[in-house]
Image (cartoon, rainbow, N blue to C red):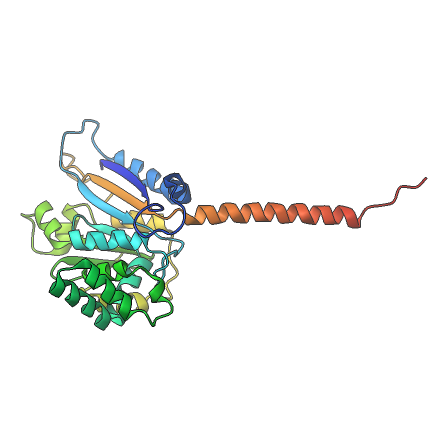
Length: 300
């Protein structure tokens, strides 16, 4: 499997409220990144020594393993990228479950308000008026009123539709796979109508994935909530289980090639560094106190 990998930190993008140093974002995910690289280079070894030019499959990976993003939308950088691809349908994506759950929760619980915002945008064709509408609608909500109104405009204009997406929820870890239906048609136009067979040709296996029938925010949210007591396996093992990694029986047939585009948060590493500094300071204070308590007056 031939793969190329692009790394992006979301610390300085869109609605991020904290650090803007891209390097911190890379550091924050270094543990997952290292394991992903081991997986990626292991898959690459399966490719023939001579690699001819070929069209690669693309995959967007949006990770929030530390659950930075919640339904209060205080942190939402990864969510914005998720919404972007829902709108563009540019490529398949593997997304942390909490990102999807938050979006589906808003679409269900704020359905009436979001629809009003969307209709204002369509009617007025004016972003400022639609944003003002969103601001006014959430003005009495102590939590949501702190979120920039343009974010709710973004949410209101995007949806997860059965007409556009295949959706698979991992059975053993907190990952969800989305595949644009038009993407599969472009990559495997001559394959059987069975979607699992089409995905296999594209290099994806569905053994450990639950297929969501009649894809919608409500159906996805219901499935996620039914699995809330899941004891997840390691996220890297989860990734491995999604891809076909064995050579075909026919040695002339190559495994699919992939471009991976990986995004995640930088916050946790900063928090960890602060905690380490605070712990070191506390240990120093304890040691100083211990020395003072055990201090013995010299005898003359």
